[in-house]
Image 1: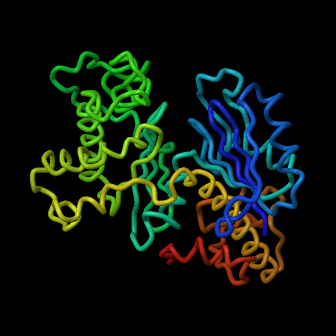
Image 2: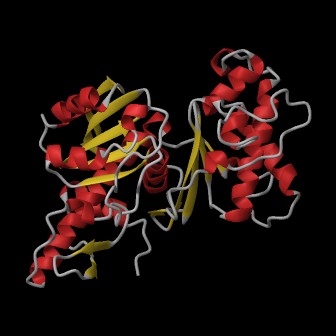
Length: 353
């Protein structure tokens, strides 16, 4: 079964065709211009293939409340043409397939949890450090949402003594994580792109300190079983031992776990096991899960003599509940395997009631 995947970024839109187990079979990239230019290119490419579902991992912020009339829309963004743009609905209507959507970092987190560094663990935190900083948390197979999706990149940190830019570069908050530790923050502070810095540049000591603060904050609040750090800045692999060392120092022995020890922390704070493919695999998983849930819902409704609502967005891509036409909510169970056992692949990591 073919699934369409869209990695919607502020600079480019990467479209892929494949499935979570077989990987990417076809790929195309388009500049993120205005919706009237870019969206038809996406539809034209994906529409050439017989995809059964579409998964979207998008820049945000997004409206991810399934009960909202603007579910699946981009809300506030510096890209003015995309503000309040109904991305999921537009693509779902144009392609006529079940469509799942989440933030780009949540999609990557889902991929790492299901098929990467989180295999065998009950929870995973994924943080991407690049042009911006964002985080996704997966617990028992479900990506955590709440009032809105988490904005971990905007947690406040303690500026370090001697930092020449203690307020950071974020236009919304003073000394937040993204403002202090993102790629643009590094470049503005030092007058040099991170890509051009040598391993002994003093920037990395400060960067490791701020990222260690973030890790400690997340350890003492949500207690993830593994922390995955990805994104362009984290291509600097020498950062990992520096971050781990500082995390141990900052925690001071307070958290009692074999993972928070000099012997265990190397396998606790790790790079993405899926490398640069976490995002696309996550988008494929979102699409595959949406297709699996829809199939199960159709079977469940048929057994009850009901028909599923025509609105595929009523199938929450990361939930286990579907809305039937009689207005009731039904917990569903996947009983018929999809091609390549995609449903089992996704659902086996869940602890469903």
